[in-house]
Length: 192
Image (cartoon, rainbow, N blue to C red; front, side, top):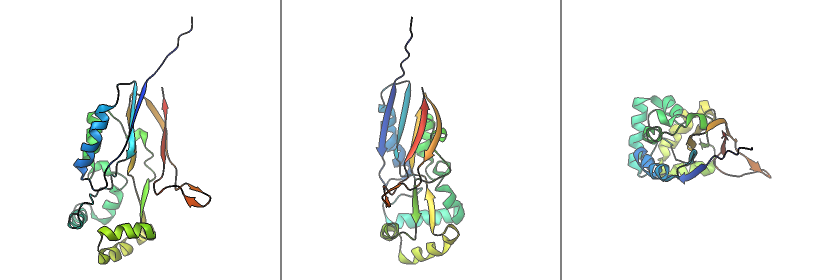
């Protein structure tokens, strides 16, 4: 007699609004987490925009920059871009944990999934929408130790019920010399 084992998996993907606050991001992801069909393995992922900032208003951005400067300092703010769950985007990760989802084993924590690159004209044009020129000059000077380019972890996977291994971030993939995306793709192996 041959036994056949079946496992079910449910997947969800979301692109969270860039102008969201940290709590808004959690509030946008939670309905997806709760709506996933019941399955042996559940996985959610996408661009969660965990930049540690909310970009609704220029004045609000200035307040956030000043707050970061006085609470964690410039270098600390840069470090939090890769660990948004520790302070500035804690609500989304607390919500995941409260719903039984794990995220650390599902993500390559050694690489960012996007970059703030003061040298990149496109990034610089985006920055000019939110950052006054005098502050861009300040950033150019302060970002010299990083060659003007710092990684951010804004694309994520989280799951429950499966065994995850080998999370990867594909660094700046190109085809015929052209970037495929401004985000680095992410992947993880799941064992049933």
